[in-house]
Image (cartoon, rainbow, N blue to C red; front, side, top):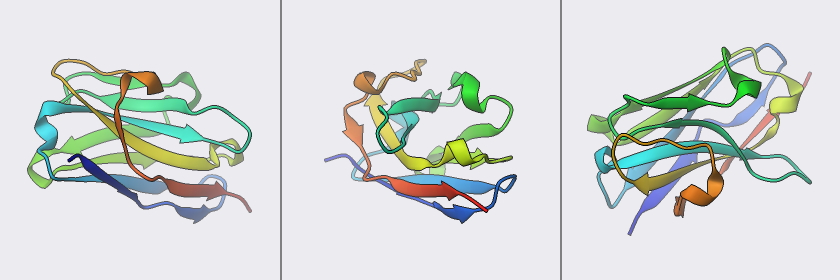
Length: 125
């Protein structure tokens, strides 16, 4: 059974950085595209960034372009989301999700079937 665990969230001041990690167990990540999503209170879950199984395709939401970078280390079965220049509007619970497939990435939550429990990110002074 696919099991994903996010980590790295926390409280950070505006302009700061965080690095989120998504660790997989029970399966090998190299057959799966991974998406990062976030959900703020009262808002729908939205795509942040996504990366194909071997990293050749990346998608980034316009709201975080130039500030967030997705990467993966299949040898360590882990995907990262480096978040720089954080803004208060980045405050949300961040989730990673997996979908089996190659040469594919998506920012649409409905495209993914396996989800982690999420990690809270709060950007506040």
